[in-house]
Image 1 (cartoon, rainbow, N blue to C red):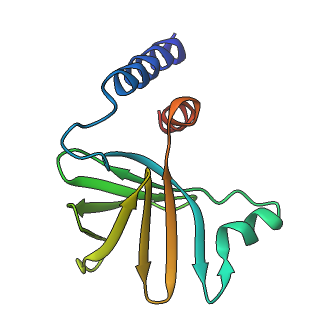
Image 2: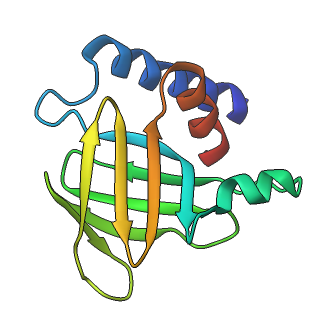
Length: 131
């Protein structure tokens, strides 16, 4: 019964996001999955896939300027964000990001992380996994 209620709630949330397209105030609001993490020319996500390992990294940006980063096997890191920067973790140093075509790119200390916004079935699967 709990699973059914969770699935119904997830479906309602997905439909409401589809209906309104997320936040009208800031199109960056949403859930993103890392598609690449490149450091010194090596894509760490692709390397893990090549080794047969799952290594999912999610970036969640809420409309209230809060958010979190979730890495497989790690505790989530709480974030703060605005139209230009994301900050959080042990040090509150802000990292500038770019947002274009539902893609967020972060660059810091020689690493470039690219996140693509989840939609439809991907978002529903994330919400089911998070529940």
